[in-house]
Length: 132
Image 1 (spheres, rainbow, N blue to C red):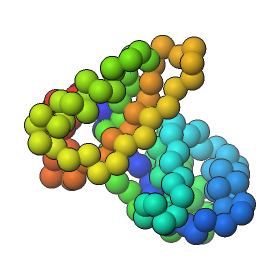
Image 2 (cartoon, helix red, strand yellow):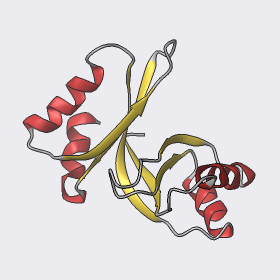
Image 3 (cartoon, rainbow, N blue to C red):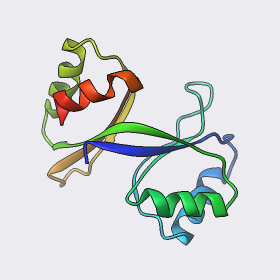
C-alpha cells in the first residue's frame, strides 16, 4: 500500500480527546495502522489517522460527529534496520521533493517499520515512482 488515505481531524488538545477518538473508532470497528497526535503549538494540531479500511473509518467518524479531511500520503513498509528510512527520504531529497511531515514506528522485534510520509499533492506521483 504505497499510497494511502490519511484522515485528518482538527481537534483541541484537551484531556480525554485522544481517548474519545480512539474509543469511537474502536466502537465503529476501525483498525488503526498509524496515528499522529502532535502537541498543539508545535504543528497544526489535531490528529492524523491511517486506517485499514477508509470507508469504515469515515462512517465511524461521521456517526460520532467529527469533522475531518482526507489527504493522500505515502505509506511505506521498510526493513527494520538502520538506514532503511534514511535511504527512502534521501531519494526524495535528491529528487528535490519536500517532505511536509513524516512519522514512523515499529517494535524492537518487528521485521518491518511503518512510515507515513506526506509530500505536496503535485509531488505525490513522482515520490511514488521513486519509492513505490
